[in-house]
Length: 219
Image 1: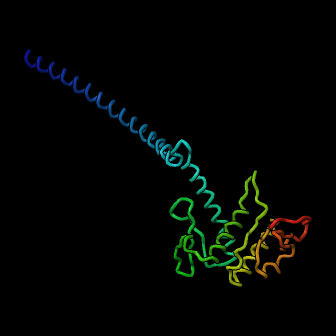
Image 2: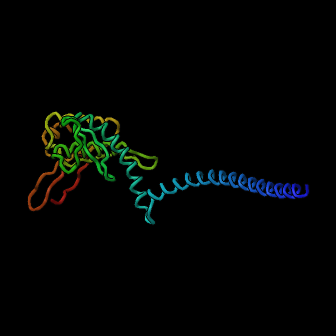
């Protein structure tokens, strides 16, 4: 009996140790679960900071500038495509793979994507005109673009594209925008009622003629 009682005491002692170990293990499991939840929250916060670091990424903030400019470029392309559709339904502007790069989708070539490096003179002018018109529609509370001046390029357009380009400019002018065009194309000159012309006078001098012109200009 004494031996059994001794063995029973030893068993009870061992049982107490095991129960204490189980309690410690359960507490560790609960603590691990709590730490796991905290780790997930920290990983989410870290992902946000990692994203910000990717965008800003330098003391000068160059990456952030490019990111903001890319957002503005997307908005510009969206507005430019609306203007481009007034001129031709052949092309669609898209953002290129590189930052701040613009590509052209040619719908007449099965949707082939082309870079701005292989555009013809007429295509370059139409894209530039669409971007200029789109830019004129972009405004903020502090900045509003109310005037647009185009320097030549109309001579590279065919008759139909030229008519559409003039219609797009007329539509912009009807909305209260001031549109100025510098061109030698006779059709342009015939369609624009208010003009300022430059006439050579010889000896390195020229003369401006038109509304509001009161003095001579050097050649």
